[in-house]
Length: 88
Image: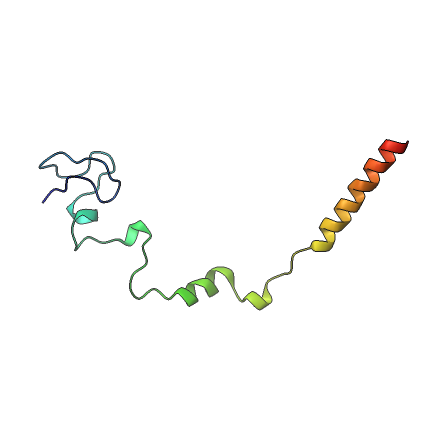
């Protein structure tokens, strides 16, 4: 059965159309309950969020600390250059 609006992109679908004229979704890619959502970026029921976070971001304790001292040194350097230019 053809939907009135495409569930993938939301555009209007003509009656008895075999696929969406805008995004190409059809019965096998997004209109039916049996359609596969693997290309849509939607995680399945067996998705392990903790394992994903560990894989993507690693152990938070091992992450490098930001270089705050570098920002402070840059600010002091710019202030010094500005003052030197102003009072030269």
